[in-house]
View 1 (cartoon, rainbow, N blue to C red):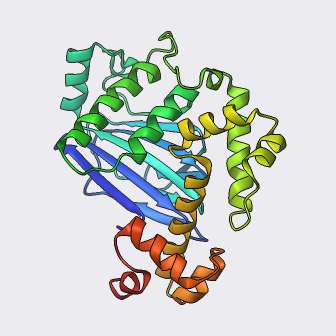
View 2: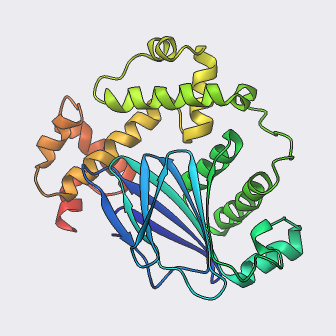
Length: 287
C-alpha cells in the first residue's frame, strides 16, 4: 500500500493522506488503525468508491467532489477502492483538533452545532475552483522540513474558510478566469486529452484550440488546478504510470520505457531517478 499511499502526520490529531493510483485496475485502501473521528476526502482526479456501515453501503466520489465523514463516538475506518487513474487527498481530524479550530479561528462547522454534534454524518459536496486550487497545493507540497508542515497546516485553514463559508470573496489573483466553472471544465477536458495521448501530447496551442480556451488561460489555469505546468504534469504522469508498470513485475525496464514513449531506455532511467531518487532497476529489486 505504501507505494501509492503517503501519510503525513501534522501532529497526533491531524493527518494528511495522499493517494495515487496510476495502475490499470482499482486498488483497495484500508487504514483502520490510523483513521480518526472526522474525515474529509477529496477526489482530485478520477473516482473513489467508499464502503460504509460495514460495507453495506457504497458512496462514489468522482473528480471535483468531496466526502465528509463525522462520527462523534467511534473512530471511522477507511474502506475504499481507488479507481485506475485516480488521485485523492484526505484530511483526518480528532475531535480535539476540531475544537481547536473552532476556538482559534471561529470557523463555522455547521455539523458540529449542538443539535448535530452527537449524530453521524456522511456529506457529499462539489468543490469550487478555489478549493481545488488549494487542495492541489497541499497535495503537491513535498515534506522536507518543519516549514513545509507549517505551510500545509496554513493551507488547510485557508481551504476551510472557503469550504464552510461560501460568502468569502475570491482571492484568486493569478488566474481570475478560474472563477468561471465553465473554464474549470475545459481545463479538466484538456487534462483528459493529455492523458489519452500521453505519448504524443498535442502542442499547447492545439490543446487550447480543442478546448476552446486562450493559451494563456489554459497555461495559468492548468498550473493552478493541477499544481504543475502542462508538460511537467505529463512528465510526472508518465513517470508515475511507469512506476506502477514496474510494480506489476510484468515488464522490464526497457519495455516500460518504450511504453512510456521514450526513444531510449537511458532517457527513462535518468528521468525516473531524478523524480524518485532511485533507478528503475533498483526500484524493482526493492519491491
